[in-house]
Amino acid sequence: MGIIKIRQLPSPEEMIESVPLPPELAARKKARDAEIKKIIEGNSPLFLVLVGPCSANDENSVCEYVARLGKVQEKVKDSLLLIPRIYTGKPRTTGDGYKGMLHQPNPEEAPNMVDGIKSIRRLHVRAISESGLSAADEMLYSENLVYVEDMLSYITIGARSVENQQHRLTSSGITLPVGMKNPTSGDLMVMFNSIYAAQQEHTFIYRDDEVQTTGNPYTHAIMRGSVNKHGESIPNYHYEDLIFCAEAYAERNLQNPAIIVDTNHSNSRKIYSEQPRIAKEVLHSRRYNDTLRTMVKGLMIESYLEPGSQDIGGGVYGKSITDACLGWNETEELLYYIAEYA
Image (tube, rainbow, N blue to C red; front, side):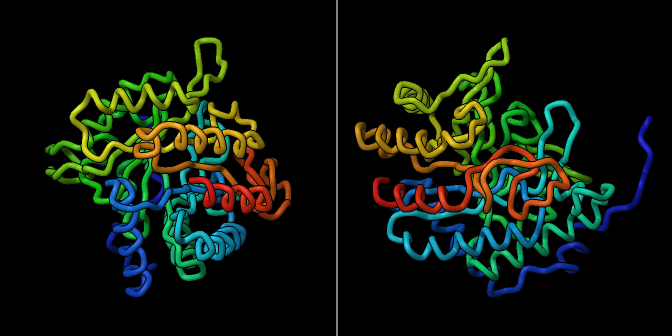
């Protein structure tokens, strides 16, 4: 095989022992896990907002962002539950570019995944400690989940992974809410097949073991838009799209039907400044239709301290080095709007 071993990774147990989540923070995370599940079940009036950088590339700026988010959470606690995006693995369509903190804890240095995993764990401990908020991450590599699952409250399956069998089966053994995005093709049936698969019991190989799962009743849909054969973005956040998704849910025997709308990616044509407009349209659709008010349970927003994006080494603190993000001032204003109208 054309694979050259670089270094041996410590076991998950060794990594967790090396950078543990203190008991008081674990208790805080557990309480948030339960509240998020209640929202997905329809047993809480709160509205979810998953918000934060496209990729977490710097501990200091990410923690400052999350600390600010924690202050907003206290002000909107009667209407919103905020989940910071701390995305530490970044899918790359062509394989080129920054692949996230897991690969490169310092984007300007060579990859080192041992240091990357330790950096991720330190980041989560600090973020929860300074904000009280446990985070979401994308399960880009299903076999790496064991290194961070004890610190997360929400997991997403990306548009390029949602058809992957291992992601579906691994999701069936996760005890957290898992949001599954529609694929880049836009075929919602692929997404629903993934949700169904993850809600069932399975036996399969995971890492070095034959395992059995119990099924995850908290897997649900994330609408993120699509791309047609000409590479053009096709949004799926409009009223008719959400109604179609709700009707497709009704035709299937799925537990806890829930929809999250991603306001960026193909829904915004990656024009980050469109996210507030899209969020407001989704909120209007919820107010207009009782089914959508029940089923659309949250929004996903890409946001950082500074608006836009920059190249690696650009030097602007708190500005994305991957997809362009909404800036903090616009984000804070939008969160208060969502809190009022959700």
